[in-house]
Length: 74
Image (cartoon, rainbow, N blue to C red):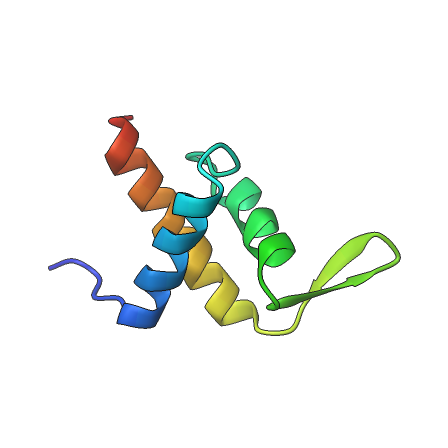
């Protein structure tokens, strides 16, 4: 059985990928940084992003990673 994700997580991830297609890759850590930069889930402090909603950011980045891998066939 696979993971079932909430519609909100899927919708946010797909919209981010749709608006910024070149920013997301098959790397989770890179995608997590991009999610924090492009949403209000992280706060920039001295040039680094501190996560305010860590679990939600991880879930969105994880779904974005799987979505990109599936779309690009890698």
